[in-house]
Every structure is written in C-alpha cells, then in structure tokens.
Image 1 (cartoon, rainbow, N blue to C red):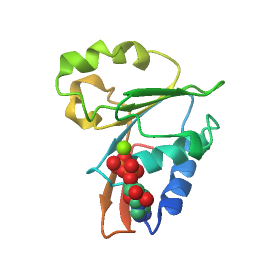
Image 2 (cartoon, protein in one colour; image 1 turned 90 degrees about the vertical axis):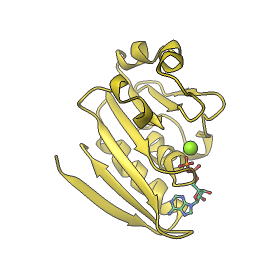
Image 3 (tube, helix red, strand yellow; image 1 turned 60 degrees about the vertical axis):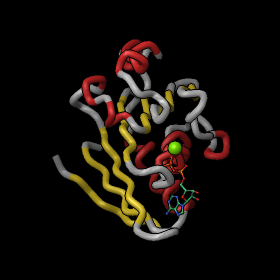
Image 4 (cartoon, helix red, strand yellow; image 1 turned 90 degrees about the horizontal axis):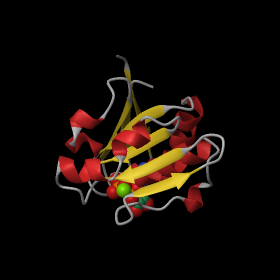
Length: 142
Ligand SMILES: Nc1ncnc2c1ncn2[C@@H]1O[C@H](COP(=O)(O)OP(=O)(O)O)[C@@H](O)[C@H]1O
Ligand SMILES: [Mg+2]
C-alpha cells in the first residue's frame, strides 16, 4: 500500500491538507488519526470534515470528553476520540461496531489502541511534530 508524506508549516496548512483528504473519501470510510497529544489529529479532522461538506472547520472541536461528535447531512461523519478509553469493553460499549456498519465516514483519534475494532480497508494518517509549527503527515490507504 502506498504512503505519501507531506510537511505542513502551520495549523492552516494542516486543515487545507485535511480538506484535500476529505474530498478524496467516499461516503463510507474509516480514517485512523495517529500521533502524540498536540500532533494535530483534531486539526486535521477539522479539514477532513470540511472537505466532506459535513461542517465548517470552526464547528469541529475535540471530542476528548464527549467521545463522539456527529456531523453532516448527505455524508454522515463521526469524529471519535478514544484518548480517555482504556479497555476494549468500554470502546465497544460506545456502540462503535454499530457505527462502523453505517454509511458514514468515521474519523478516530487514538484508535490504534484497539486494532481489533477497525476494518482492514481503512485510511491511516500519522502526524508527527517536527517543531512547534511543522508537522509531518503520512497518509496510507487513501
Ligand atoms: N503544522 C501544524 N499542524 C497542525 N497543528 C499545528 C501545526 N503547527 C502548530 N500546531 C498546533 O498544534 C496543536 C495541535 O492540536 P490538536 O489538533 O488538538 O492535536 P491532537 O488532536 O493531535 O492532540 C494546535 O495547538 C495547533 O495550533
Ligand atoms: Mg485531538
């Protein structure tokens, strides 16, 4: 599977890259967003959700405490943050399996902790901070 790596120099550039990724997705996709705290997972999600036409970037906030945010009309998007979830049983109790059965784009932060949950056919985006303003963004499977 081919991976492409892009360097972004600002939050705005990461949002723009997210828009591009969002426009390339179908109505049904699973996207795992991985990287340390502050790497830019939520920032990229803002762009992806905007690129899908499901909400404006400003309306996308971190689901760290709320766990799941739902967006969209024609294309449904679920933005999930599993940072606070420690056990697979807790993740399952959120109803993730049922969400994954829907015609929807599912964006997941910290999903790599629960590899058994995700379909083999998925997009993975890895974000790594190079310095305060620079991020290396590697996209696989898009
Ligand atoms: N190139 C960049 N891309 C994304 N975020 C950046 C970039 N440069 C600086 N930042 C900052 O890094 C932080 C990323 O936060 P966030 O997207 O919430 O990360 P995560 O969801 O991975 O914890 C924000 O404060 C953002 O302004
Ligand atoms: Mg986040």
